[in-house]
Length: 347
Ligand SMILES: [Zn+2]
Image (cartoon, rainbow, N blue to C red; front, side, top):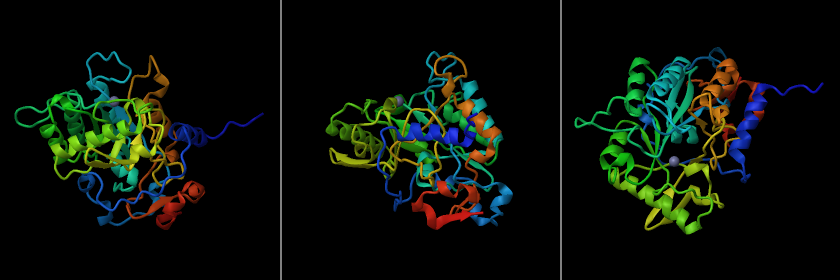
């Protein structure tokens, strides 16, 4: 009788297939010199300030997988598989908080700068297409009740340590605001990351190189015009389609604007590898679809993966509480990226 492969290998296989379609050569280690993202300093009180516990005692595994959740619109009666109700969104956030997850930005994940307390698990919340159900501000500059940002802020208040942060992948005139100055400025001021989703939301697969550069540079230019001094560090691919030359996603220049992304995020369909893993591929980071468990593509529902990770906690990324080290059980050693060896803390 052939033996069934362990669940860990099945999950990692899914990650590998989703993240590495098209097989790229190993990317250079990501070592940006400038601070990445706006939310770093607002991540929960620095765990490095207190005593670092024994990694075995907290079950640290910083080579485990990280859920990167993908959201689109919140609607009372979703008709599209990518949309969910405000109540479903709130329930998913409450579940994440209860299960010990702490939100980090996409940039913090991709660079491996995730300063979260020992025993906690990072989760990345991403929102595509910059729609009004994600963020609408009232006349007092408060997020309108029922929008994704308002719900996230409420859940963060109810669960101390559950940081209100996320990454918004925006297009032209984000959140129905010409130029996006007010909405993008608000997001930046409140510790959210603003990422590139192309200016016109066009799939990049069949575009000539010059147009790929135009789309990414124009979106980056819009964001930096709206929020002077902000950096745009990550992108999400419209419809998950990468350009034929993957290098075009990661860096380029057009119209006098240079852009540089430390990671590009796909659509679906599994948990993302640890950024310290050999499997981490910045040119195609998989995301989980937040969607119902029935109907089209229900097998991709984020809740199914969260169920699996809850049932087998050793698969999950669990922090050791020390952002300077990468702690993991010795049995996981083979999964460590050689580029990260200097920080390794096997136990
Ligand atoms: Zn989109």
